[in-house]
Length: 257
Image (cartoon, rainbow, N blue to C red; front, side, top):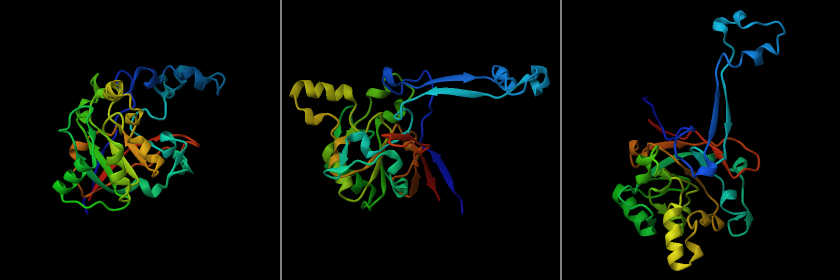
């Protein structure tokens, strides 16, 4: 059997605008020779020339939030409750079964930046690809943001999933979704304008807030969704186990047999 694995994750890196300014990753790199004093501290009398190539170890010091890079959001990120009043589960409590399931890709790259996807949009795309949703399938949304990663406008690019579109998926048993955009919802720069025009607070983070009614997780800042077929693959996206956290980083991949 031939197996192909497609990487769906972005880098954790400096100098790429993958988050708003206060929340960007900070990575400090330490080389093999810089670390010699640290190694020598364990072994009094050790000299650099005693080591092969006068080198010790390399390592990195990283300052992150749990929503940097490709990550999985837990229901606790969206609100303190889920399923109409239950305590929202944190990332260490997310069922691992949710994180390894057949995948379905919805192609919304043609939709304009800031557009809020509706149930009709989802139904049309499912009809186009000839697929009936099954419980626990992982549904990922390919937006125009995917091709903008690494560009300064990435955070403001792509469509978002509205409350009703998200509920359409959840009511059919989907419990884990994903997007190649910065957020499952439409970029804030567009929602900000709509809120200013209408004064309607229900527009803010509406896709996330579907978790109040049905608890679910979603992946954000996926990458390379263009390489996937519409169906016929499995997604693995197990999150880092951080006690009581709202999200965890993941090396999300698609597996094609």
